[in-house]
Amino acid sequence: MSKLIYSSMMSLDGFTADESGNFDWAAPDEEVHAFVNDRERPIGTYLYGRRMYEVMSVWDSPDMTVDEPPVIVDYAQIWRAADKVVYSTTLEAVMTARTRVERVFDPEDVAKLKKEADADLGVGGPELAGQMLRAGLVDECSFYLAPVLVGGGTRALPRGYHAELELLEQHTFANGVVYVRYRTKN
Image 1 (tube, rainbow, N blue to C red):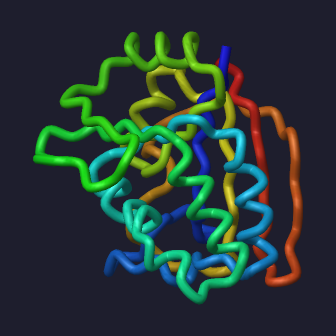
Image 2: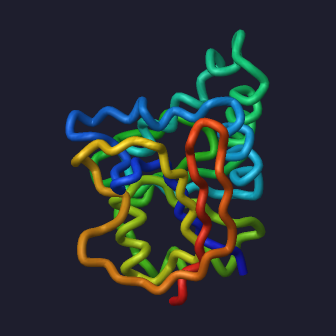
């Protein structure tokens, strides 16, 4: 059975975007990006909410590989090779290849997808990840903690959610970002 992994860049105080919706403070440098690429390479399917899908869809653009460093080109290829499932009641049409829309988040359908998948699944976006955490579907959480406090905005984790975690891996980067990977004890 594949794993469902919630991976997110976040501020040290636990936000994926600040109160203005800005997340440029989380942009990875080349060292972090190469590390992210290696962690994302085993993902066969990404599960997104509409907003995260719209943010990530830029990776499908051919412009993402023009005059870009190899680490960016590598990530674009990783992202394009994966299937995408977007959970949305409002998205009218997908704008990327290998993508389908699900109108309703059904935990049983996701559990079945995990069971039948040949590769790991990644959930992106804190709202959908929160639903999957609460449903007990997330097997691992991988967080890239940026050395910044933003004071508010979009929370990376749902309010009131409690879980026991087991530390599997940690890594510190030269730019001050700290990577931590935990197994959830569902």
